[in-house]
Image (cartoon, rainbow, N blue to C red; front, side, top):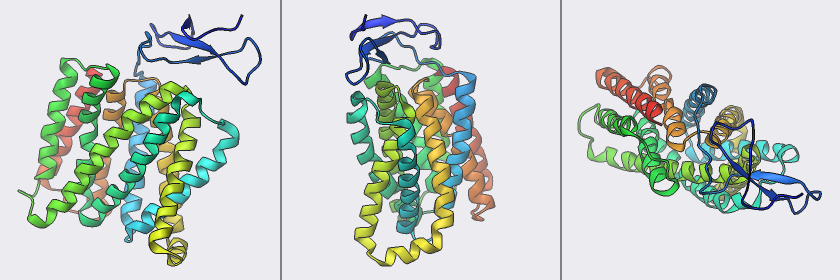
Length: 327
């Protein structure tokens, strides 16, 4: 007999305590049901060791693509070559992953808008500031903002250890931002752009976490996310630069393809992890890219690291570990 919305089913592949509901698939054969995670169900997100390891890999890939994008002097070109890669990978995946269920579309649409704003803010921060200053600030803001929003919106509340992790990350961020003393007036625009980027990261993290849980098809969700927001950014860049953009893309396409490949794999992993683990924990693990980014900034771009950046990196890492333990 076909299942209906609200009918709980047991699934051996789910974490202990997880319950998903079954609904009729309108386009499918009679009697076929699709499991769907519904808000308010007894599904309990669990971040396993395998999920944690996958997200740590995503963190390395994330820092790598950001460094590659930072290396492209023209930030509009950097956004465009990344976006072209997003469109190519997203379109190539469609025959294999299909269309995510309708329940995820509102989250997907909102996330596309936020991702577009995020890319604009990110490249502005890279144009205005040093990589090892703006990258840690933008990425390091995400875990505690996600923790707060997830508690208020999703009901995923951190315990005492997790809250301690939020405080430690905040202290580490202060060390990173003020590593060279109080910022000069001419540094404030870069810091503002990085802070804006961090808030946008937290916003799309929560939206995408809810979206992949509603769809239960993280790779379909990811493919459409890359295709749609990449397409919008390419159109925006073409409008701003015009035909001259093509010549710039020919020069930077290899770097863009490498960066885009890393970005697609990294965020695909994160979306998969968000469908299974707690949002704040996944966000915190992902932001270990701050550590990788700080090292890349010093080694590749010859940006000063110094004692305070070392201390800040260790403090942020400790805070992320506490968030993981408390997630």
